[in-house]
Image (cartoon, rainbow, N blue to C red; front, side, top):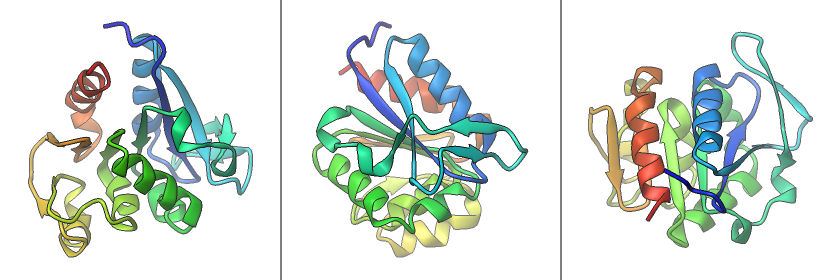
Length: 173
């Protein structure tokens, strides 16, 4: 699958889940996507929950929704930090309203809960935050990947193959 010309932002902040940043980033690049990391702007280098460093290619203030085709929201504790930045929530919400691909895995749904994108949608996430997505208006489903329009969601790192299969498929349309 060649997705040359597509651009996807992978959100990153301290305490990100290692696999949920690096696996999508490399799979996207392997498919020809210009995939880059976008941080909150609090620093230039973010550290995973296991101590692995990830540089931010761009700050949230340097990105425009019109220059991307999708966003990947990894899990870990990072999404709870990311959603504290209004610019992050606005970017995700604007991209969602424009029909761009929003791919959220694990605790990444916390960012979606801080937007208006979940009302009436079906979504999966890490089971510990299912009440949050339900309270944000979504129907929680317990499956490895859920595709509801332009929102793709998965539960945990074990679901990454299905998550990326559906994300790449959606980007190819």
